[in-house]
Length: 365
Image (tube, rainbow, N blue to C red; front, top):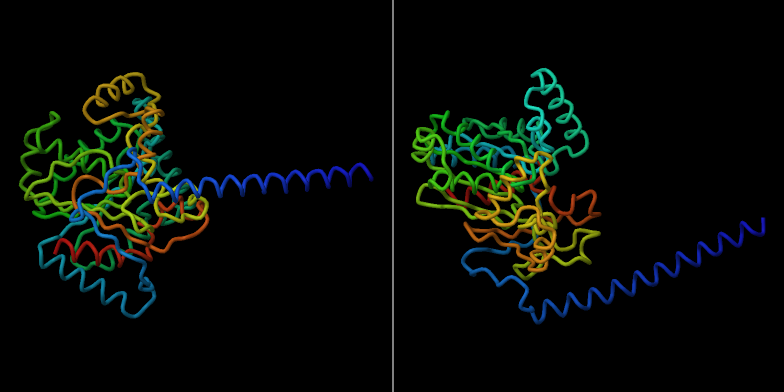
């Protein structure tokens, strides 16, 4: 019994020492970060041009069950239709698609019924775990469809693999998908690295990658309005008079820079996954051929899987993408990093649907 009491006292003492050391290290790191914000060393990303972004402070959200919510969504629907936006396509980001770990790519001869079973099970698991966080859930899509009368809303699925060739295949698939529509103007909303698929699509349309010339010709005649949600600043867009881009990013500081490490536990500074998804952050593919293709694509798209480059790029604290216009928005999602998915979950929450659509409609239409 005496030994047990001594063990408990030792554990309590060790825990106290650990907490004291952790607190001291936290204060030292926070002091370094405050100094960095004051003096902005050379390795920090240069501020983007003032006209390319706008910081939007925190404001109350309109409740889903409020009496004004259906009316305001109906007004948004009328504005979309007035500007001939008859179709909205929603695109999920990394790990939220049909083949995030390249299983189907590695085993192309899997029977269709097995593939469909795996997709259904993975969709069920995602809906159960994430609900409407970090993905356009079934309930989100249904709510948007019923709220925007006269506008067709659909989801586009791609592998969602976290590497160059996965995103490029997704962009080619998106080209084929868009070429099947008769709509002359389409609004595309992409979460996270789904936005990189949009960037690659613009490069395909500009002729940078070989593609079906008829599909390219059909899509080039359409007007495309892109809205990215928490897209890391990475691939470049080839914009023109028919392709417009608006970026919405969860952001909580006065500077147009990504957050500090000490803010991670409670999502203090905004979207950390958007900050960390920069060049060098890709996963290696389990397929040797795809790894070779990724190395080749790295020459034109920037480093894929490169931990050293990734670490260097994170230090730059790049927040604002180089193309389009960016709204840096305080969504008010402060909370434990697991519940907020490091600030990356908020964009597809049903409770911010109206806020996002107000912003994009006022910007585009």
